[in-house]
Amino acid sequence: MRLSQYFLPVLKEKPAEAQVTSHALMLRAGMIRQQASGIYTWLPLGLKVLQNIQDIVRENMNKAGCIELLMPCIQPAELWHESGRYDAYGKEMLRITDRHDSQLLFGPTNEEVITDMFRNNIKSYRDLPKNFYQMQWKFRDEIRPRFGVMRGREFLMKDAYSFDIDQASSVASYYKMYEAYIKTFKALGLCVIPVRAETGAIGGSLSHEFHVIADTGESAIYYDERFEILADDLAGDMDLMRSLYTAADEMHDEVNCPIDKHQLRTSRGIEVGHIFNFGTKYSVAMGALVTSAKGELVPVEMGSYGIGISRLAAAIIESSHDEKGIIWPEAMAPFKVSILNLATDNVECNAIAEEIYQILCSEKIDALYDDSDARAGQKFATHDLIGSPWQIIIGPKKAAQNLVELKHRATGETEDLSPEIAAKKLIL
Image (cartoon, rainbow, N blue to C red):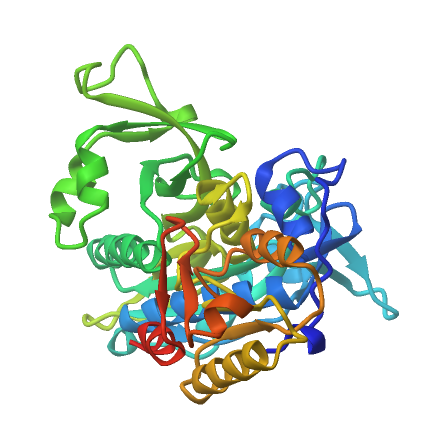
């Protein structure tokens, strides 16, 4: 993409309303703009990040055997009356009445809708297990939206729902998703700590939150020091990982903690995923029954599994930035490389920049070609801010020698290369 044809409204100064780094950098980098309290427009750069996250999440959910579908944002209230959650959910639910006086709501989650879909279409144990997922915008009317998309009212979420014939199978499905989440976050360039957590309004007795370690995290989390090594190693022992002590703040008991205090680590965390096993809470209430191998009608065992897609964008920035701006992991970056033409009035610079851009485009490498007439310092500031993992810098002196500078954003390391070699390093 040529910058002259793109929309990238960067800001030089930190916006006054931004309380945390991710909010400030997302505004400054032209990723988002606020429309109302806790509600944002995702601009082109931010949308590319969301799409990259979705692609990685989708790939890992599919590998885990999940089936993608799409449920409605607007749900009939009668389903929530059936489950018993309509009055219990609280003011976070946005309730709506249509022209026919029918009660509707903007879904904060989808347990009721997926249970209704299941009970109308699956009747036998032979069709189990199943795990359905979607990526969809949700709305929860937070009393105090804050920290940008970290605690917004409208947010993009991946939610999945498992269905099994018995409790043992359901717990096995739960831990299959636990492992899939570790792999998903690793593919996103993140090391997460899954901690035992309360189930809240979702229900059930088995639950884990997945946290990214960050100083600005809203939650205190506690975990065995050995987990840091295991969590960073996908070949690690998942059974051992699950057996180690971890706890969210509300689940931690300092007095009765089962491990030595010297092994216990305490950090701040940003919750980016939450999984639940809630048994037959919804299937009993809503009559989601299947015929067992013995010919008996039994309520199906269920679980749900969420990943905050839009929140992840902010969490990654909180854990990966410097004083100049965002440092994207390559898998997440809106552009893999920024091409900085520092002298658009120079024939050699223009020719080299165009050559590299065309090579990268032909190889389907996401490149942002800065063909603007902005000063060199302004270009450096902009591209450090938006965080492309690589920069190809083209100036008159080196262009005269048929050289460009290849810079790695995270380390700041640079090397002078021919245009062809620089492009090749990004293609490999």
